[in-house]
Image 1 (cartoon, rainbow, N blue to C red):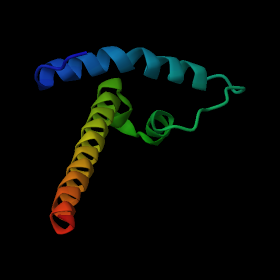
Image 2 (cartoon, rainbow, N blue to C red):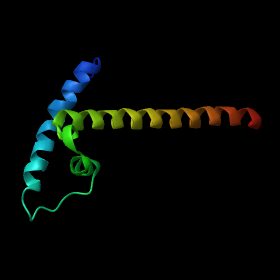
Image 3 (tube, one colour):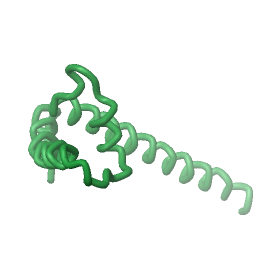
Image 4 (cartoon, rainbow, N blue to C red):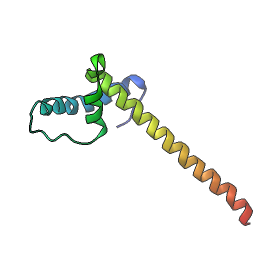
Length: 91
């Protein structure tokens, strides 16, 4: 899946997550449903008012994904630069 631009990314995210969110909401109506312990379930349960709309939930997940990928990239870059900096003392 290739994201080209923010609008297309939002569209793809919504297409992917909407069926999952709707299925979770439907299953939550069953009293015997064993709720999964994950971020999506927590987000659905914690949402209030307009935050309960599927589009809002998708946007929050998209922001979290961006932040997690960004921080992972920064940590990897820091490790590589620290390793390169350390090697100059070994030679």
